[in-house]
Image (cartoon, rainbow, N blue to C red; front, side, top):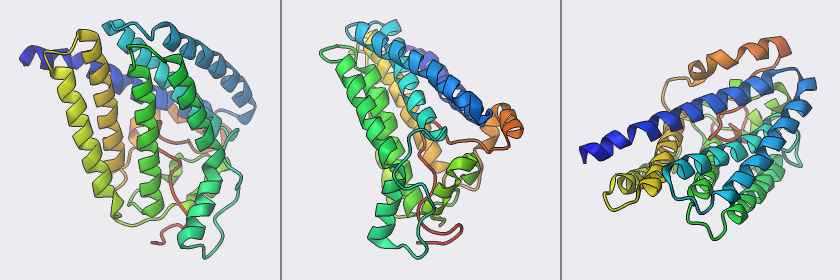
Length: 282
């Protein structure tokens, strides 16, 4: 078991670095002047095509290197999806603040309209990743992308229902209207269920990675996914604890001073807030 725990070190370090660095890179690119966004997205789109091609090419590669490649490619696809949103290219049919006094079902519908086109894009990308890895033994890429999607949905629902930290400062100016779709409260009833289920799944996947019966490539894939899920759980906790995640990405925020905009959003997190006025509870 000690050898297995030691083998967890590299996936842990790699997943944490990729999570931290890719988030910062997207925040930095989003903070550059808007005239640079089309060029950034064009380059990212080329990398997206290469990532999907690599997923298809390596779908039968069950080696440790194959697991790392698939994980990295899924992160690239997810990063492209986030860029389309934060740069304002794909958001939703509603591009204005939540109507005053909206409550209940109407509030939910308005919030959904504000991000629906982007959610449809995520679904399309998930399908693309699934098709690229179809009939393959290496499913690390698909599992990584689906994990990011599920935890993003969970985070959005928690923000909609209300959490302590809304992280409005991570929204760029052009998306600041989305702040009216968040609610501030110490916690909501969904939050304990979200973090408990995600923590249990993290432990389950982690135990698979440490199992002596699992081949090295599969173990590496499980470890990478488990660490990423653990980071998503951490992001959930940062919504309710009296701490700020901003310090993690101070290195990438200089560009926002030049562009006059605030940064975007955490990579595995959602759009951050839902239909009540700032500071108002549901």
